[in-house]
Amino acid sequence: MTAFLVRRLVGTLPLVIGVSIIIFGILQAIPGGPLAVYLDNPYITARDIALIKHQLGLDRPLYVQYTRWFGAYVVGHWGISYSSGEPVARLVFDRVPATLLLMGTSFLLAMLFALTTGVYSAVRQYSLFDYAVTVCSFLGISMPVFWFGLMLQLLLAVHLGWLPVAGFGTSGWPDVARHLVLPSVVLAMFTAGRWSRFTRAGVLEVLHQDYIRTARAKGLAERRVVFRHALRNSLIPVVTVVALDLAGLVSGAVVTETVFAWPGMGSLLIQSISNVDYPTLLAILMLSSFAIITSNLLADVLYSLLDPRIVYR
Image 1 (spheres, rainbow, N blue to C red):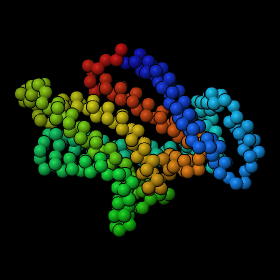
Image 2: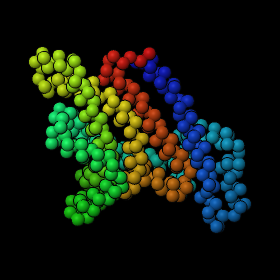
Image 3: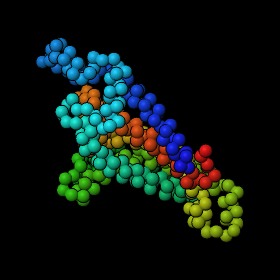
Image 4: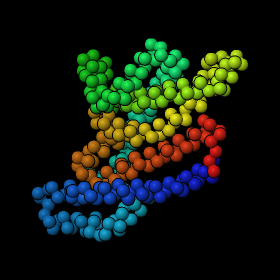
């Protein structure tokens, strides 16, 4: 396993470099490029644009610009934000805790829903509970995140007044927790239905295997058969889906943070796009890509933990 991890980490480097080249190239291709924010300003003359271009090194060949940017990014120098004038690294990492809190809470809620409802639906196949979970799962999969968020705001915050409409909360952790309820539920809904369906399908497939019949024939309790023998072996496809869905969770966090004015990286990304804040955009997109690559690596590690027959060479 150690040799496999070392090989994967080494193999990740070309992937990170390839992703960085694609992101850098796409942002260079937007109309106006990195100087788009200055080109729309009527008070900045062509001479000023040329001077800024020279100071930022944008008059050099693209490969030189990329090399300088990537080298500086690796050592933590992410540039200065065009819109706020603050260091991008500080701007981004000030938002990371709020995003991690939202995504972590949503992830736990989604996993709790998926595992409990998926397993129970498989054990009680074609029961009323199974049909109810199926309907709820398809509703969760098909509903747009922003629409569901707006409906919850209208019902629970505006009409009933049970929860805050938006914001982060500034009066301690109880206040933060109240503000966290609606966005975390909305973001959890984004993936919980899909994960529940995969859990149900995986458990159903395993429950019909010969070794499960053998375990039952030995007189093991049904709960032990399900949770000790069936659930563990059915989680491999779920781990794959969870790893692949992380990108969707990140994009869902962008929408959710915008709807609920949550001060995380998602709302910062939207602000950066609106302000054409080139350095901040580069930093956030690279950080998101790295998070997705890391999640796929963790999924490979989980495979071998769930099924010892999987051996990496």
